[in-house]
Image (cartoon, rainbow, N blue to C red; front, top):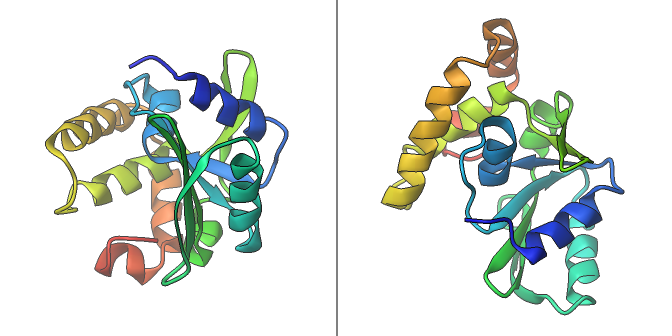
Amino acid sequence: MPITAEMEEIISYLSGRDDYAIFAGFAAFLHTGVEPSPDIDILIDLPEKVGKIMEDFLEKGWKRICYSSQHFVTGTVKNHDTTLDICFSPPACHALLPGRTTISYEGTPLLVITPEALFLTKMNQLTSPLRTDAKTARDRQVIEILRKKIEVSALRELLDNLEDSFWTLGWY
């Protein structure tokens, strides 16, 4: 799947920020080259920024899909077949944001969760009963590639910082 014009719009928007980390499928693409679905997921450092980022995209003609603050704050906007998922989660901010790394995509520096964080979150997603067969297959491919890239010491450190909810509920 080629990168959509809407994904390029998200990338351009993120290039001017320092308060996020890309995770999930697009992070997997940046770390491994495995083709992403047409969406970008970001962790953000403050809950009120979820709504602000949504507003920025709504002003550009994107559609609001959902907003929730049940367990943590999430919002989704969509344009054509591309979605931007924005998430604030205190445990994720504590464990995943501090160690983020910068990866250049076509000359644009983007903040992304580490290979170790991606490895753990992808392994966690494999247990989700809601995961499609296609996403499960992609997750397995990503995990196999990341096994060769991760630093075990960084993985152990990350394990020490993950909240219990990551293991017991499947989210962070």
